[in-house]
Image (tube, rainbow, N blue to C red; front, side, top):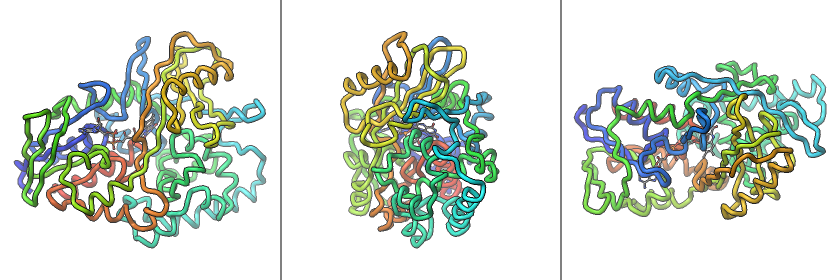
Length: 429
Ligand SMILES: Cc1cc2nc3c(=O)[nH]c(=O)nc-3n(C[C@H](O)[C@H](O)[C@H](O)COP(=O)(O)OP(=O)(O)OC[C@H]3O[C@@H](n4cnc5c(N)ncnc54)[C@H](O)[C@@H]3O)c2cc1C
C-alpha cells in the first residue's frame, strides 16, 4: 500500500494508539488520530488513565500487567518504564478468615487436582486455535462449542479447584459475575495471560502467578508512547461518510478530516450515532454488550495490601467492592474495584464507604470514584454461537474501514494491543 495513504483513526485507547504506532513503524506518514475523552480533553489512553497522588501513579482504569503480556512488556521497555511486582492477593473469606489467592476454599487431593488439570489440558489441546487468533478468526465450530456460559463450562468439566482458586481473581478483574453468563471462549482466551512468561506449567500453582503494575501507570505508558503521534484531542465526531475509495470525518461543527482508510477504535455501538453504517454494521454493533464497573482511588489506613472479597463475588451484592489493592507499599493509596449494576454514583459511594469500614479501614480523604459504562465489550452466548465475532471480522477492510479495539479481541490491554498490531501488519504491509 502507498505509504502516503491518509489514515484516520477514531479513538486513542490502546487499540487506536497501537494501530497508529504500528503504522508509523511500517512507514505510513499520514496517520491522524481523532480522540474524544469524556473526562479529560487532552487525555490519551482511553481506559488506561493515571493520576498522581503523593508522587505515586494511581491508575483509575487498567492497572495490572499479567505474567504473559509480551506486547505490553515490550512497549514498557520501549518507553523505558519500569514494571513493579504487585504483592500477592489474599482472599477474605465469607467467615472473615483469609486464605492466599490460589488456594481453593476446600482442600483438594493431588490426584483430584491432577485429574482436573488433565481435563483442562484436553480442552486446551482441542481448542488451541483460540490462543493464536481472535475469536472472530477461530473456526465457527469451535466458537459454537465454547459459546456456553463460563460457569456452565466449569460445571461441565467439573473444574471445582479452578473455579474456587483462580476465578475469584478474574471476576474481580471485571470478567463478569457467573449470573452474567459470559461466553467461556472469552475467559479461556485469557488463561495463557496468567502464566509466568509463557510457561503454562506455572498455572499448576495459581498462588504463584505474577502480577505487575507499570511504574508510571498505564496512562503514563500510553502518554509517553503517543507523544510523537499526530493526535487531535477534544474531537466531537458529527458524521462519517465513506465509500470504497475513502471518505471524510466531519467533526466539531465545521471541521473535517479526509481519509483513504478509516480505523474505528472507539465504542462501535456508540459509533452508530455518527457513522453511515451498513445494515451489517448496524446488525452487529447493536448486539454489543458491556459491563458497567466502577473504580475508586481511596486514601485510607487499616486495610490489607491486596484483597479479594469472597462474599461479594455474586451479582446479589452488585455495587460492593470486589477487590482492592495498595498502589504502593509505603503510601496509603488504594485501588478499589466493583460492578455498578446500574446503580447511581452516589449510591456506589455510600456502599464503598461502608465497605471500607467493614474491611477495617479508616478513610483519610474523600474517595475519588469513576464509573465506566462500556467496560469489556463482548457479545452474549447466543450471539457468539451465531457467529457475530466472525461477521465482524469479515468486515475488516470493507468500505475503506477497519475495526480495532476491545470488542475484536476481548479482554484486556495485551489482547487489544496485540490484535491492533497484527491487524495493521496484515492490511498495511
Ligand atoms: C476499571 C478498569 C480496570 C481495568 N483493568 C485492566 C487490567 O488490570 N489489565 C488489563 O489488561 N486491562 C484492564 N482493563 C481493560 C483495558 O483498559 C481495556 O481492555 C482497554 O483500554 C481497551 O482498549 P480500547 O482501545 O478498545 O478502548 P478504550 O480504552 O475504551 O479507548 C477508546 C478510546 O476511544 C475514545 N472515544 C470514544 N468515543 C469516541 C468518539 N465518539 N470519538 C472519538 N474518540 C472516542 C475514548 O475517549 C478512548 O480514548 C481495565 C479497564 C477498566 C475500565
